[in-house]
Image (cartoon, rainbow, N blue to C red; front, side, top):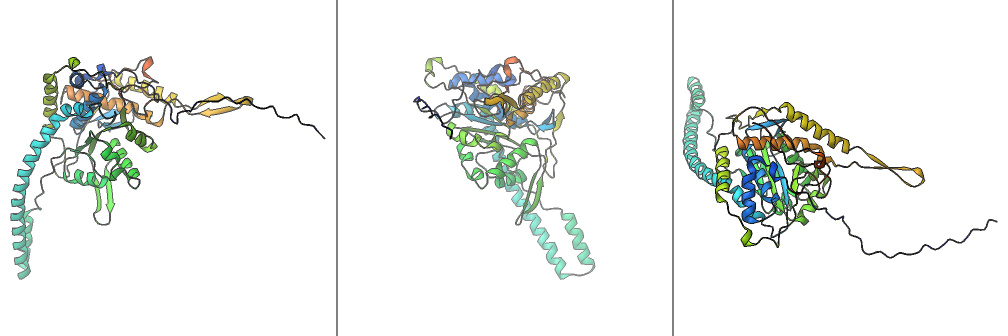
Length: 435
């Protein structure tokens, strides 16, 4: 019989409580110098509100994207894509999210108000025209029922001459706050082909009907399709089949951290293309003596935005399908985007580390799936910047991007495409050439 030595007791070392989630590292300084024509307005609003600069920057990027997304697509490494941006700003209550968003959205709100008034007047005129058309059509049909032969043929000619039913004027609304996918589709069909989901209380949308457990996957899939520029297709027993081409959507949701964590934890949400910012709080440092007012710069930004918004969108008159031009990348822009895409691709390769007894354990790469669209987002940002700087001028998009050694593999305090604290590429495009 073999004798076994008694096991030696393992000494107990008490440990303190461990956090359930890892600590989120502080982000790098927001690259406000790379905001091109938006920089001055962003700094002006930040000076007035004394909020983190990432908050007004996200608002400016989103509203600029909404204004220009109907005019152009941009060439990317994966082919032409919309310039639409999806932004998610994470900041707790009291960070002055609304104070930053309001001045930058004021021009859009004023434009929508004026267009709404004009639409109501046009709707009244349409009601009168439609009533006359319907009355004439009913008269022709009534006479056709009483007659035969040549008179029925004449009635057919009269109907052809009367023409199609007058179309109601489209809705003037450019933004919504908490739509369902069905409601958004209906608005795309009857309203503007370029829309935005904008809310400084983004929890209303993320916690609403569109994002509940029954509709979440459907809504995220629809957002991803619109991000890629795909047509909207719906087939329902009551409504039949409908396909809407050439629609564009920009998104900016301002949410508190607890709401954002639940949203970002969904892998499908993380892959939808959101530019996420969670800046360091400035609460406790916002003294009135340090406030800097610059209403002139904000007004200039608003006027530039109004100029773009008042420019007629290129679209098909019958289907209201947008017909944006495609802006090619200049050679230097393509070369820099290729470098960025290759760096991100290499960082996704599996890594191997040794374990006990010389076994190897496979670990994931240094980036997530969300990073794969960084180069695409760079091109979108550049197109947005140049369109705001010189609306309607030029024909190429040239990119000079801030892709330096330290720009890859660290979290930016402002713009990321991943969970806060994960390694990422800086998303702020520098000077993205002439548009």
